[in-house]
Image 1 (cartoon, rainbow, N blue to C red):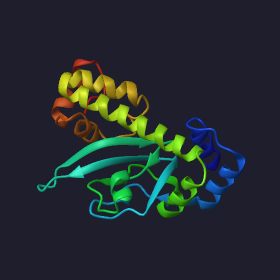
Image 2: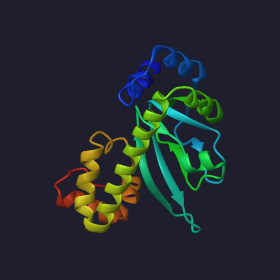
Image 3: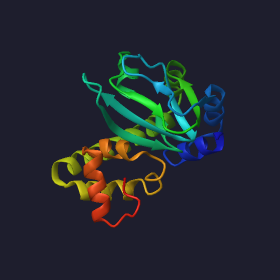
Image 4: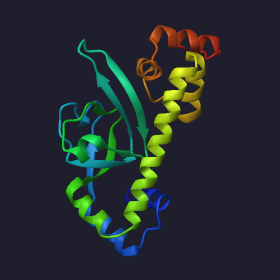
Length: 195
């Protein structure tokens, strides 16, 4: 799991060996059971995570209890309620494990100390934020310009291995449509096990 972490970080920045060591000293392994939350809405997060094995989703809940899925995060991704953590305020959304998962966690204050000590971490953070911004921009474009079928095709392209790992009502929520509408789209596309 730690090797996957280092490989992922190395794709985003040049990582000197001494910085590798400092990062690993901070790392804490955590098992998260399916249905358990890494962060809950209203909680002020003090740590972020890296997914070594498993699957998570970010979701909002409205005043009527309706859930709106913001995104899915499989292995090799970082977990955080970033704005809440940096602004020291409650998170607006939940992060839930969709499978039994193994993650590596980092204390945010320790991370801030580490990142202030070497420029490689600024490069890393900019790369992470750029990826998040690009994803957000693409998602906004899809919601404004694409119909349900095109959004579903985009989901399958972005997450080719998730359609069998995620419940259909969560995928529908992510696409901004009802489960019934998703079933219609899947039937139209000739997907035999439409639900």
